[in-house]
Length: 415
Image (cartoon, rainbow, N blue to C red; front, side, top):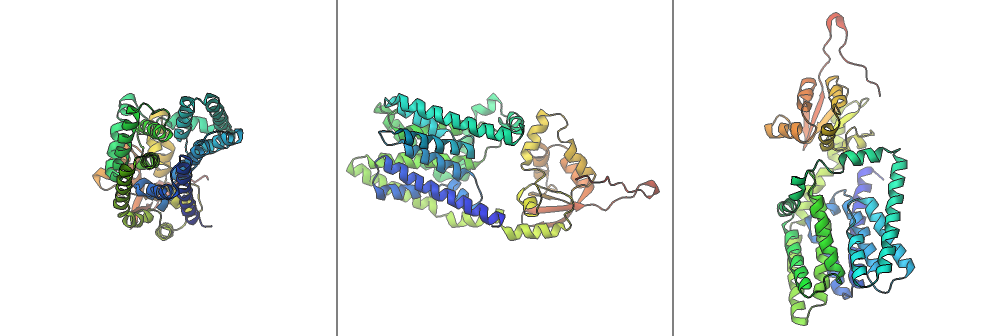
């Protein structure tokens, strides 16, 4: 299949598995089929989930595997085979996204609190063994480079002050990108408070899952560069907790809870069509094809802020994430020099940016947050703006300036 079509298909399949996993987990928690099915669809109310459905994203796959792992362990009693299956799913969730440890932590705390300590230790041991196998495969497959990458980039350049602001940053990001999620999370927090008052918090798997997810997500937002996609797990945990709570409520309260959740989901779903139209434009294949055609000959690498463009042009991406260039150059002296030197020698067939560096705010972004100091000046001195296609600014090399004696100043390109 074409690259983008397969990416869309895999993302949609992951969200489909996520809704099925949510339904399965709620059924294991004793929720009636009709309420479990409706609640599984409530997961789609969050903008972060809608984005994972309508754009190529990996977050849905990790969340789906995580929920299926919880579903495998949620109903008592536990057989050895079910514990192993849960550990396998939890390991696969971690391999898809290394921060996805919510399920394992919640399950182990719940099992210990419900006097199933042996099962808890067995699940933890098998999952940790799975983590080690995945990590070992990554280390061997990358010849050790993954360790260097993790050491350099894992913290994202965070300091203690930034880590302490994780909760504020998470709430700010949610309010800005996904206000409906804030309502779901606020309702879930009120349920946690009610469960805590009844002194059965540690025996309530959905409440533990929500609390652990919130705590780890706050830690994730303590790292610079964290985006709204990490809010997806909060929505999933909120829906599971609210549905389980409503299912166990008394009749009048239960009816009111169902009406409230239905109304909230309807309000959240209204902007979905507008979001899909906007998000799909980010990965529109015809747009990228026009950009590739505008670049012309591609005998040299393409430097693109969006790595999809060189991939569709049949090349390896020279840079996957420009923000990491800025991060690594703070840790490794002169890390940026090969990139700047290639710009000065015009060794890229084109430079494709997602913003206009002629604007002061965008130039400041590239010089301080993205590629780092020297990037815009090296670009403007050696490349000219050729064309703008939607949100892609295409820069092509300036004509070669002959040196004294007619020698060409261009350095030979060594692939």
